[in-house]
Length: 65
Image 1 (cartoon, rainbow, N blue to C red):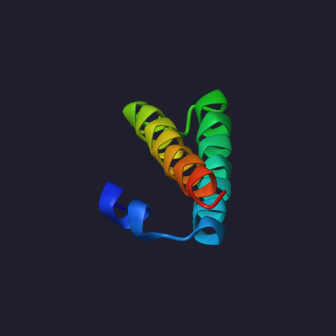
Image 2 (image 1 turned 45 degrees about the vertical axis):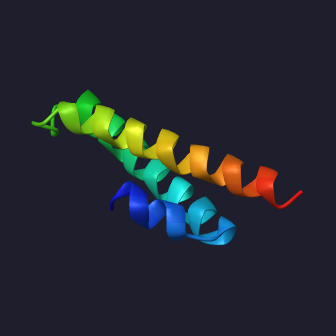
């Protein structure tokens, strides 16, 4: 998903996206512990996506006030 896609989402969809990404990050961390994850750079990509989604979420919540 691109930044443009995140920007066009509403608050509820952004909350769902953040929740889904956090679950994915948790599963990746558990995979790291059991040595099932081969591409460790994917963890950073997921963390960046979470930060981007949370940034847009904060912007949307501030603009609605």
